[in-house]
Image 1: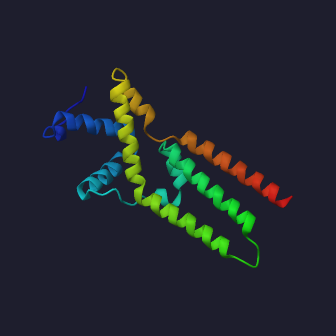
Image 2: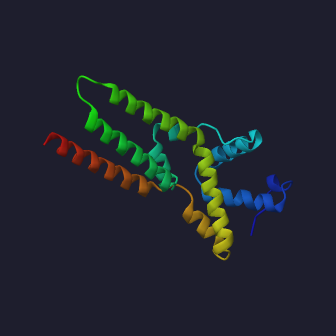
Image 3: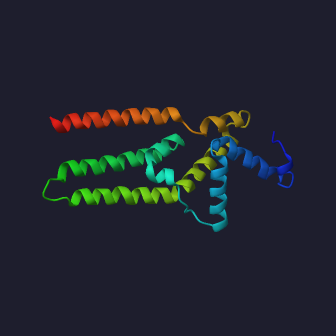
Length: 172
């Protein structure tokens, strides 16, 4: 099932199988995530930094099929927007700075732990494949992993729609 190449010759078969499983789930940018996961393992740390997760946390989460984390950020942004709409006026700008601080801190925390959360997601997919789908293991790993550009497009569509509706209701 696992193919040993010359570079894998010194690696035990189980480690090669695990690497192949990780490669099947991660797919795009495997080398980047492999280095990040190895760095975390060597440092015995859960922290790192993921620039994409800082600047586009919801989009990165949905693209990497981490829908729960993306939904949490949508809720955070929604709560911050609701607070802004209810409390902000021209005399007191404090709610805007507080909401900006909440968003920046949540993005920073997520960026620091994003690769760790992604590693845990990959490990859950691999464990599920071992337990439930031994016959169709490779197909399951590939279908549950990789990037989902369709979910990103759907997310962008609904976010744009929500912003338009929000603007319409605020104006009227």
